[in-house]
Structure formats: C-alpha cells, structure tokens
Image 1 (tube, helix red, strand yellow):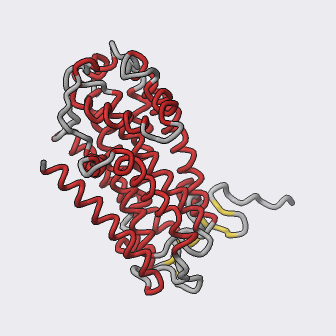
Image 2: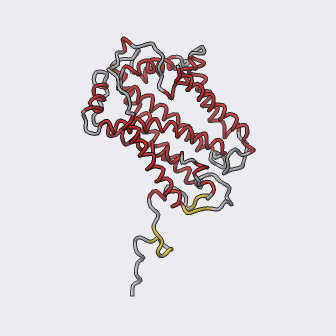
Image 3: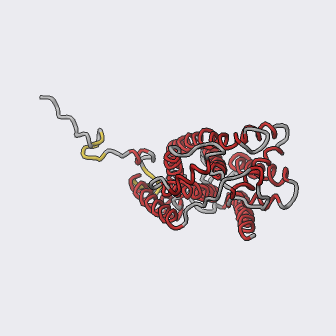
Length: 351
C-alpha cells in the first residue's frame, strides 16, 4: 500500500505541527525571551514598518486623484479632501502615518544605539536603518510640497535654496529637485517624481533589505545563551501593537485632519519663518549664523557621525540590555544629539 501523505497543514517532519504563517516567516524560528518584552524593544521596529506600509498604501490610493502640476495640484487635493468619498480619511491616514514614521524610526534608532543593538555583525544594518530614517524625512518634506498650498511656501523656498549652498554641486542639485532656476511650473512634477520614485520606492526596497538582515542575523540582538521563545509570541504582540496603531491613526484623522490652505503663488511667497515640525531644528540652526554651516554642513556632519558609530566609535561587545557599560561614549553622543534636536524643535514650535 502507498503511505498516506501528511496533511497540508502540518510541517514536514513534525506531525500535527502548524505551518508558520507569512508573518512568522519574517522572524527567526525563535526569539530571545527577555529582549522580546515590550520594555526592551518598545515595539518601535514593527511600528515603523507598519507606518511605512500604511504610508505607501494610502499614497498609492491618493495617486488616483492627485494631479502633479502647479495649476492643479492644490485643487486636486481639495477635491480629495472634500468631495471624493472617504478621500479625507485616506489623506488623513497617509499624513499621520508619515508623521508617525519619522517619530518611531527616530526612537527606534535611539533604542538600538542605547542597547548596543548594532553590534555583533549588525553594523551594516545600522546604516540601512539610518538611511531609512533620512528617506522618511525626505518623504515628509516632499509630501508637504506636493499639496502646493500657501502654508508650505517658506519651508519649500528655504529648503530648496539650501541645496544651492552645497559646494560645487549646489546648482545641479537644486535643478534636479526644483526642475528649473526657481520654484514654478516644473517644481510640483519634480517633487512628485522624487516623492514616489526617488524616495518611496527606495525606502520600500531598503525596508525589505533591512528586515532580511534582521532575520538573517537572528532577530533581536542578544547573547546566544539567552532563553528563547517561539516566534509566534512576538507576532501576536506585533499584531496587537499594529491594531492599536491603526486605531490611533483613525482617531487622529477624525479629530485632527491635515491642514490645507489655498494655492501657493511662488511670486508672492511669505517670508515668515514656518518650517514643518520635523525641520524646526534646522530652522532654529539657520537663525544662528551662516546657512552653509548651520543648514547644510552641520546636519550632514550629524548624519555622518551617526553612521560612524558602529565602525569608528563603538568597541563594545555586550548585547541585549539597556545602557551597557561598554557603550558609554555612544550613549553620551546619541543622548546629547537627541536632547539638542529636541530642544531646538521645541524652541521653534514655541516661537
């Protein structure tokens, strides 16, 4: 007689075992017990992925109505906001997901730095995470520009003009972003191209690469001898966190939808300083002196300093705990930067 084949719901070699789901396959077979607790990860990595996916999905839906031209951009957003069924909801979720992505990605980088999570062969993944954070900032900035309303005029003018200050390549970079010698007809189309093809698609690709590296490296950073749990436990916690995050997005959209002013007129831009919240720190730095040094070189130096942490600054080896003793220098650097940026942001918001 021919032997019966095992049921489709079982795993080969383990009779009666349930096949792992797609979401479980995103994680290693087991996870460290202590480091899987919420007080260690704070759920920031999973939430960042969730907000990135929500931003991409809702952004794709907005593309059905958005018109990337200076004459029609603001009107198409008005149409989405006030006339398309549930357009306000899709736009609101898109907006708040993008804002939350910047917050959770920044906090996730801070958590990884304060726990030494970039050690033990994970240095390159730190660079991938840092690159994703920079792309998230770019996505938020270009997204603000795409609504082409009067409230983003100053930020768009100053933000693009900072590119002119880059030595040797400033003029070229400015034309790549703006499309001409000044803000105008081609700007919206260029911002749209950068937003979708120059930032979102690379961000999704880097996110997949980042997740692959996390899984290949064994998941959450920890000592190899630590007790471990089945990955299904972490998946359940992540799903719960995502459901709570989705409810929060819906609540924010309902109670405080994104603003929308009248069409932007590049010929009559307001000179009143008003940057989006995630660039308030740079706005305050620009008040201190030379725009090249405080608006270009200093922010770039901060990014390069963060990129150098696992390669040239940190020499520790301990994993899986907050504030390891052999990581004091890194902790001082990242906490100093976080407090400085937070103080500048708060100062700009209170003006």
